Image (tube, rainbow, N blue to C red; front, side, top):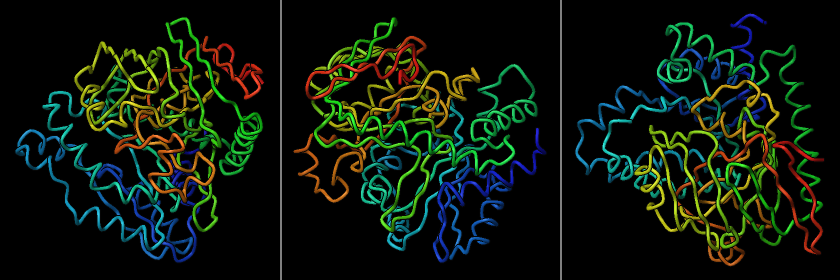
Length: 411
């Protein structure tokens, strides 16, 4: 395997050169854990080498986050600082790229009052609603990546020492992001081309609905709205600059019809939501809405998620990922949605990406609602893929085409 420091530097370069595709004179805003300071400095080095106007970092520290939840009164979590939201919007208006380094300990807030977590999720979602239009509508380039932190590494590899856990998680991340290959950027170009082929096939077929079946009890029909668009790999921002929003990424995705989901679906991997795990859950849908649910772990957290707003009970994303893919084949449960969602077919509760329907990025909220597009303050992915998952697509003229068979692409 290549030298660690070489891969680390190449990873930082990949983030800004391929992920954000930073342009000369463009600001870069980074959200990162304090444990990742050395890596963030490497990212900044490459950003300035590409001509970044400024690199601004918003730091977070898990010890302080937990301390705040343990000691601050409820009113703190019911209010979100306006200055923070305004600052992000100012950078967005200036055309900044946004790099998020997501590396949360999945059980950081396990012992915290779930009502505080729910209040904070609601307040932050409302305060950042206008800012998120810049990313959800692909107006600005954005990218989510991960680096190991000790708390997260220890959850994924609890049987080894702290040092070994960090080493193993770095290796897993490098493998998933193709950093272990001789020419990572070339490897990414080839990978994105392969995803584009899948996207083109699905867009040509213009499926009316998808039927999911698995031996775990999943039996779900998902209607797709008129004019839906499949996407995957990367996209273009409002200045026609290509960027890759997730690294790693193995998915192709679109939106469901808000009122067109019916049946039962079972989760197949744990969901890390706000520092808590939700696992082994089952959802029953009628006319697009969750009407019943069970969860062996995290039931109250899931209940609070659904109570955020009406749109949280509906789906906003349909994503296809083969069971035979690099992250899935690693047999590692990352307890991190960025990775676990790219090892498994998944859906998302909440807001749909307007870019997944023709002309959606220019539609008003009312027009999107009329087109069957779900809206919500949240967007939370959850995994449903399995090794025997079958997905059959039905076209407008009633033709049925096997899309997934035994968990993998059937074409």
